[in-house]
Image 1 (cartoon, rainbow, N blue to C red):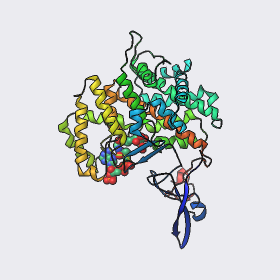
Image 2: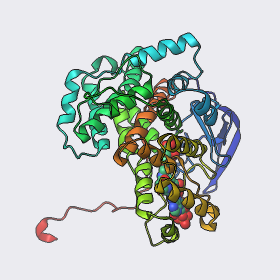
Image 3: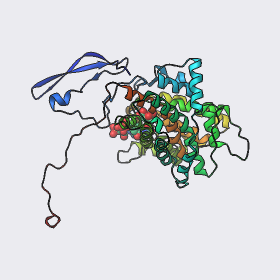
Image 4: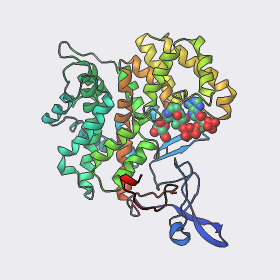
Length: 434
Ligand code: SDX
């Protein structure tokens, strides 16, 4: 990637009677940055920003978010336009290559991904080592990392060809692994992917077909699945993407880096929120219980938070949540479960929260995880599979961000420092003297 940030004046830091001019850089859109790369060498000072609320970790050209406006762009294209007019395979090409594909380029890319969907026959032994009640995210973390044991020919990160093949393998095999994690949990035989099917329909068939009868899929559900994958594909430098970048900065192979992203995504504050949000809606149970849970969410002494609400960046409605909510209604209509009590609770909870001054003042809006759980549950997925689907979709984003990092000429191993407040030097004391 060619760095494109442009110098835009400087910021003066004055400390201990000394002044330091720090360059300010401008991107295409979004906040300017203060380039502090020389700060420690010239002042002996670190910056301090736990949680990275004011830190740009990299230059990127993939995804842009404006949290105040509620804007999300993949390579400049608004997420709502892509969700309505594109498809997940085309979005994968866009995220990886930076431009929408021509018809020929799309056909080649789509066919390549379809032909990498199978797993090495011996790979299936991994699943049998897990308890049947293992959380599918535990299976994903374990098996995805193990892919590097099978695909040595695509682990040389300095070989662009190997990086391309590894990227295609990751995108193509995640649905097969995710479906196997689900089938293993319910004790059903694994279903082999079919090359003539498109990505989302192929995945749904691997999850819900059984050998004992012909499988009839739903075009509406396949379209909804495809749209859900688009919404989850990438999201700037979130926790799991930053994890993938940091793991990759040491030269670790792409499969291991993606496994580290899956581990980070699992947390309930991040990708695990869709599972947590549905569990919360089920715990609330009925509309009349909502006020009590709103009170708990506002109580500083109560660790309870409204799962599926709030976001580090969005201080406006998450643009993905709007599309997710519409998709939720479409899926429930298709399945004839429009009066799902969980949806009733979710819609009333959203209405109340958006009027409550605590949530308004803290700019807490529903995020993508608020409606995804209801949708996925209606489609037949158990709650534990929700974050697996998030990881499946986000794999292309992780891969695109990892590739961009590898190709960045200024890239170096990520190695943050700290402010130390622990014990100062002291001599060892033998156990008899303690
Ligand atoms: C994802 O980063 C990404 O891009 C992530 C993601 C992606 O696509 O990769 O968008 C996917 O992870 C979406 C977020 C899913 N998580 C949840 O829905 C879990 C519930 N949300 C919160 O845990 C929280 O909102 C976070 C973690 C999402 C954001 O936390 P921040 O930015 O660290 O904000 P904060 O915790 O400092 O909260 C600010 C204030 C606090 O009150 P004060 O201490 O200032 O008085 O808002 C309050 C918080 O207590 N608050 C909430 C709340 N979220 C924040 N209060 C009640 N319910 C909530 N959900």
